[in-house]
Every structure is written in C-alpha cells, then in structure tokens.
Image: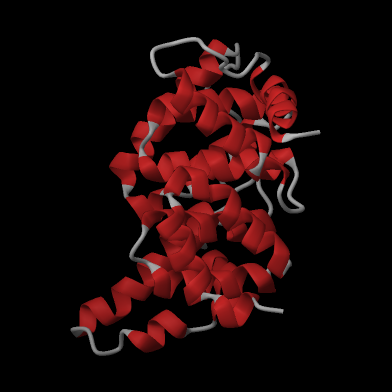
Length: 251
C-alpha cells in the first residue's frame, strides 16, 4: 500500500473514521499531517500500535496539547490499550513535567474515559507504603542506575545532599515506577520519550536510553520510539535525542 492507503487504514483502526480529504478550513495542512503520521511514521520500525499510542499520549502530556491528548486516549481505547496503562503513561510524567502539567493531562484523560463510559476512579495502582517507599524505590533504581545521583550531588548543603537523591528515589521510582498497570520495560522506554520531548534534557535522555536498554528494550525499539514521537515533539528534539545517545544506539 502507498502512504495514502496506509493512512486510511491506520486512521480507521485508531479513530474509527476517515482521514481528511477536503473538509475543514485547512484541509491541505491536515492531509500533510495525517499522511505523514499515519501513512509513514506509523509504519516505520517494529513497535506495534499499542506502544505507539502510549508514546503519543506521553508526548502530548509533556506538550500539554490536551485536545489531541483526549483524541489519542480514545484511540488507545479503540485498539485495546487498558485504561490502567493509559493512566500510568500520564501519571509517570509528573516527576518530569511537574504536578500542575500532569493534573491538566489527567483532567483531559478522565474526560475521554468518561466519554467512553469508563467508571472512575480506576482500581488502585499503589504498591508501596509510607514505611517502605525508600527501599521499594531503591530496589527499582539501583539495578539500573546505581548510586549515580547520590554520588553526583554530595556537594549540596548537608540537608539537601540527603534530600534531593531521596526525593528522586521515593517520588520518581517508588511512587510512580512501582505502580501496577505497566511493566518496567515500557516505563523506561516512555521515560526516554518524556525527556526527549521536554527538550534541554539531553544528559538525562542519554542516561535513560542506557536504562531502557538495561530494562530489555532493543536499540531499534528505542530509535523507533523516538522517531514515532518526532511528529509530535518536532525534528530538532529527535535529532538532539539521537545525537546524545549515538554511542549507545549505533550498531
């Protein structure tokens, strides 16, 4: 099939409708957008539709492009992604983009859930307690990242030298990465996408590319995830992510 036929097929699978022909005020722009994303990029690389839509939801959360986020939450549901997986993709953006941005995305996600007849709140996904947060977070963090952050920030004033690494362990790894609903391999791949989409976080992109590989993702899957994110985050951020990770991703 050519990219126009590919676009029609993918658009129907995701949204249950037809791509733009001549409708609306800017049909030319929409044809460019839809044929590129759904006719070309969506067919490049090994990742399936489930992972691609979780990547899209992640980038749209980072970008705070909420109308498009609602549409792609619907697309996720249409292809069988569970509400819990969608929720986790949005929730785990919080340590990176901040809680206000995550709350905006959660509101849009919940609107899409409600429109689909999904009862809220979803089943509880927590696995840690107040007593074991640090140990649980460290159990996820240490095998992949060791004590890199703790070692790097020993120069901070004493209280912060202890608090900053602990906050990362307890919030980033315990409160979010240990939750039910998404496996560690997927979480690490989506974390690479979050950081790439943010821009200006190339040091962290490289670190988490290494983490994603350790978690079981292949080099091709990491590249595919970044390329799939490109239409939503822009070409420069794709190139920045690839350039800073070249030594890890090259064959």
